[in-house]
Amino acid sequence: MTAPDPNQPIPNRPISIQATLAELVERARSLIVPGSRRILGVTGSPGAGKSTLCAALLTELGPDAALVGMDGFHLANEELTRLGRRERKGAPDTFDMGGYAALLERLGREAGEDVYGPVFNRDLEESIGSAVMVPAKVPLILTEGNYLLLEGGWARARATLDEVWFLELPEEVRLERLIRRHEAHGRSPAEAAAWVRGVDQRNAVLIEASRTRASMTVQLTL
Image (cartoon, rainbow, N blue to C red):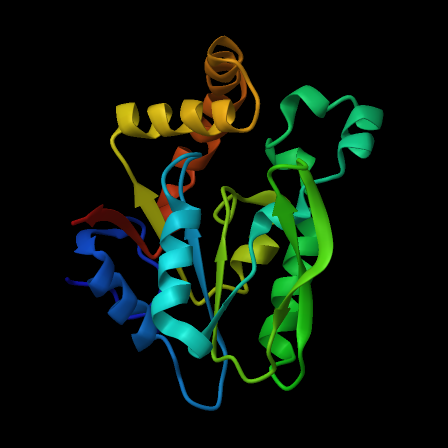
């Protein structure tokens, strides 16, 4: 696997690689610097496999890594209803992006103390605050989410990240995964397909347009 030097400026066109999970684990491990803390972001369109990859990295890296996801910063359903955004949940403006950036900044700055962050419960469809603890001495923070590379207010979060991987997946596989995910959480097949077409795909267009700001694009191979 060939990967960019994280100390070099991000190029206009990120390098594109195919890599196994074992190779990505080694790439993540290479970011660890004793006595300091680094933050690795994983992004890509909905259904690209961000959560699955980060969970695998977390398992392989053990106590050297901790995971804090962007999805913990979903606005509550009651607030989305008040704002008239309930049917667009998952769009960029349905997150507390300032809160997410502030947590990443704190994680990068306060490596000497335990820090708590939220998680998103897909069964409840709500975020739960202070549900994940990042130990003081963990050298590598993993964070994943759709909008790590967007401009505007999201750029504050991007500025905290030492490296960002953009996951790629064949479109037909990604869409099938998304529909199955929505069905697993209670939507009918028709409702799941409609949500993917009407919400997820609109978000995917924005995410795909941001890929040039990644450190590298990644196709995971067996």
